[in-house]
Image 1 (cartoon, rainbow, N blue to C red):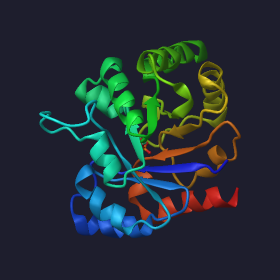
Image 2 (image 1 turned 60 degrees about the horizontal axis):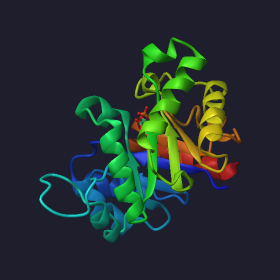
Image 3 (image 1 turned 90 degrees about the horizontal axis):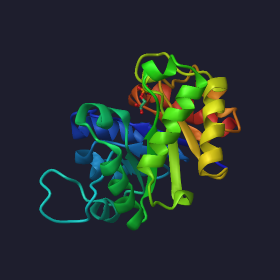
Length: 235
Ligand code: PGA
């Protein structure tokens, strides 16, 4: 199976000109580019090899929901993937499993490919493997209530590893991914995210249990992102 490299630009860049430059330099087969909503049209129009993704989507299709972005509208705008349940949304906006569950259902209804992020905070990580597995599985259980699990992509993103250069080790990730696959089924792709860069991408992509990467900071640096995507094609 081809490994998926998802670029999560988060709230960057700030101008369409910068987004266009970044999009042109990030256009690799097997990559999914997730720009801010305001640049989806610009970026989507430029990508030839990579797919387009969104960083969130509403729990409703249409209507009086100020500030929300419709999954159906995203689909019609050429978006193929959607990231849901990112720890920054859970943390800063208080998104909980109830809302995330409704968002997943709404996105699946319009055949968007859902990338659901799960992962434990530092305090749970310190409690060891059993505590981490318990946390991640209970997050999955709550987020996925009543959902056909066979159509999902999971991103395991330990919160303590995001944006600080302190990635989890392939051994740690393998252990968690094995438990996730045991819970969801072995054919569910599981990405890893958390301080991925060109210096460590290869050691993750070599692992049979890691099906791809979710890249934040390094996806804003074209030289770094292109190296990550090139490792992937060499595997
Ligand atoms: P990072 O972010 O690569 O900057 O650690 C990953 C993410 O939050 O998706």
